[in-house]
Image 1 (cartoon, rainbow, N blue to C red):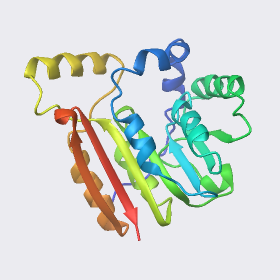
Image 2 (image 1 turned 90 degrees about the horizontal axis):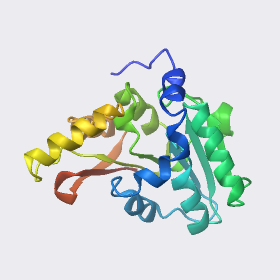
Image 3 (image 1 turned 180 degrees about the vertical axis):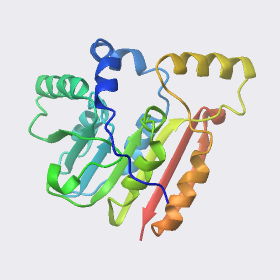
Image 4 (image 1 turned 180 degrees about the horizontal axis):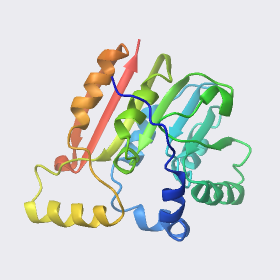
Length: 219
C-alpha cells in the first residue's frame, strides 16, 4: 500500500510555471494527444459532478463547461500561479461561475473541505501524472474519490514502443527538460489500484504507444 505524501509540491510548480503559464495552452495543443478523446469519453449526465486533478490553466474544464453545461465542474491544482492564470482565462470566457477551482496537492487534498463533496461521478488526470513526483500516491487518492457508478479517466504520455527509437529519445529528452517523466509502469499501477478499490480497469495504448489512456470504473 502506497503511503500518502506528507509535503506539497506547490513551491516547485509555482517556480516552474511562473512564466510558462502565459503560453502554456498555445504551446501544448499539438503534442498532448488524446485530451479531446478523454473529454468526449467522460460523458457526464446532467447534474453530475466532474473533478480534474492537476487542472493547470483549466483548458479542459473550459471545454467541458461548453460541452456539458448542466454538470458541476471542479478543478484542483498544486500551483497557485497556474490557478491564477486559470481564473483569468475562465473570467474572459464567462465561465468563472460554472467551474470551481481550488489549490491542493494531488496526493492528499481533502475534497470535502475544498468542494463540499467526498466523491465525484467523473475524476480525471490529463497529462498530469507524468508531472507529479508521487504520482502513484495521487493515483491511489483519486481512486478513492470515484462515486458509485462513476469512473476515473487518465490520459498521459506512453512509452512510444511502436515509434522510431530516435523519436522516443528526442521526445523524452524534451519532456525531461520540463520535468515530465512518462510512467513506464502506469498500466501495472492502474491495475493494482483498481483491484484494491473494486474498480474495473481498461488500459489502451494509442497513437503507436505515444499515448496511454485508461478508465477505472466503479459499479
